[in-house]
Image 1 (cartoon, rainbow, N blue to C red):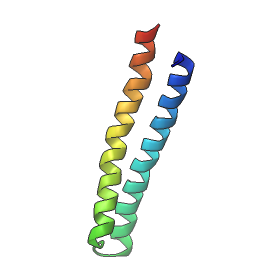
Image 2 (image 1 turned 45 degrees about the vertical axis):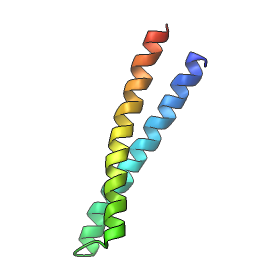
Image 3 (image 1 turned 90 degrees about the vertical axis):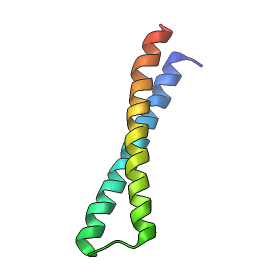
Length: 72
């Protein structure tokens, strides 16, 4: 895989995972603001979006910054 292509995929992954995190955070906050308690499936969905979005964001950001330097 070309280094430029790898960096582009890492950037896309970072944006996608950050989007997942934002959707999860907004869903949690707005859901609790509108409803006093979220239904269980929605609560679980938003928590998973938060967790996987945050973890994926850091992993893809580190992979996009560290691996291209190692490939040089």
